[in-house]
Amino acid sequence: MNRRLVLAIVAVALLAVTAGCTVPFFGNDSFDEERLDEDPPGEGYAWNETDARVTIWVRGEQFKAIYEMNGSEKLKLFRRDFRSKYPLGIRAVRFRYPNGTVVNGSEISIRKGDENAVIEVPDANGTVALTAGAESKHFQLPTYVDGSYEVILPEGMRTGIPIFGSISPSGADRYRGDDGRVHLEWNDISGHLSVRYYLQRDLYIFGGAVLLILLLGGGGALYYYRQIQSLREVREELGLDVDPDDDEFDRGPPPGMK
Image (tube, rainbow, N blue to C red; front, side, top):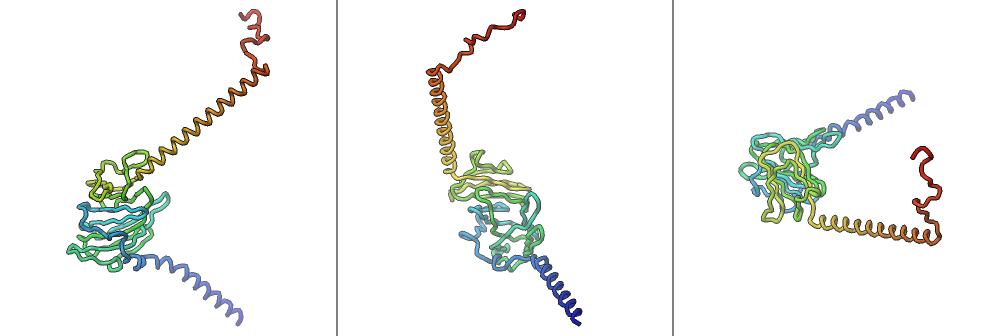
């Protein structure tokens, strides 16, 4: 009886462990509603600010994006690293119907798979807005839909000097908008978007660092040169310097080799 009781307890424990292991697998297919419905950063989403199919505002370590669906019913969002593909962590999601009505992310179908965050829109002619994380001074993201893009950099950021800034794909129209920010526009791109940018003060910091290194290097070289000269003078005073041209043992080549 005791043996049967022990076996029953073990069986129940195994079932509990197994059930606990399967919960994350089946329960990881959705985003937290509170996260989806939170307020977007800044002044919200500027739905009518540009005519591009995709408009992206980069702000520090996050970005806001608006995607015109243009007949598409799904938007698959992901990132890639060297080893895998994984869902984009999205929040503050909004969907705008063609008539201008805006609903929160929890009111539309959003699920998270192993590789993608999938947004299924209730109207293929609507618009999706979302917020996600970004790297500091380097924005990169797959182009989930083809078409025209506009990327608006943070205030004070520049891309003009190749060592510090880069734009991929190339060929973007670049201008400074009325908001004082750099705007990048592409008529039609696909694949991957990457923009590296910098603050103007970064150039002064880098230039100052280079100048300091040159000054320290020049000062060190001058110091060692003076030390060598001083040692040479000491050797001359002690008569330790020997001119190789006056070597008395240098009698020239052996007989017959001249």
